[in-house]
Structure formats: C-alpha cells, structure tokens
Image (cartoon, rainbow, N blue to C red; front, top):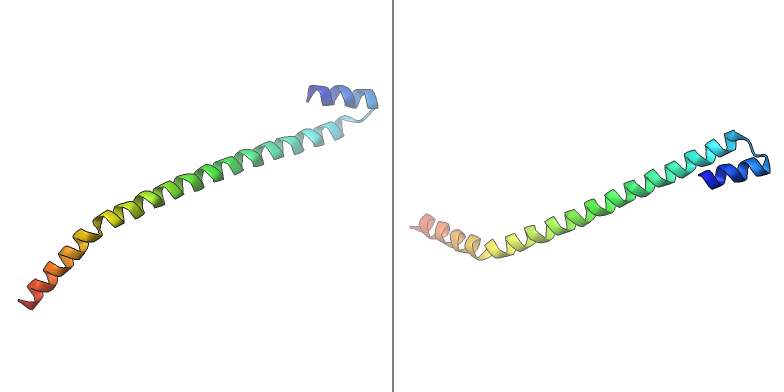
Length: 76
C-alpha cells in the first residue's frame, strides 16, 4: 500500500482512487480468507464422513447379528 501511495502521488492520482484500490484489496483479502475457511470446512466434513463410514462398516456385522437375534425371538 505504501508503494501504491507513493506511485499515486507521483502520478497525481487522487486519494479517492487510492481508497478505492485499498478497499478492493481488502475485499480480495477477505474473500481469500473466506475461501480458505470453506476449504478447511470441506476437508473436515470429508474426514468426518470417512470416519462415520468406517464406523458404520465396523458395526454392520453386529447389526446383522442383532437383527437375526430379534427375528429368532419373534419367531419363538
């Protein structure tokens, strides 16, 4: 921003343009930070989904066993 400020003074560009450029740079920076947060959230969701799928796969045999026990008791 300092280099930009010096350049604007040399070229005779007004402070309004400099403020506009600064605002756009800040907007771009905030958008970049928001995008990084979104990517991190997606990564966390994918990890959570993988662990849940693993947990489901691990519990399927027990679920099947319990299902057969319930069916056996119902028939009895």
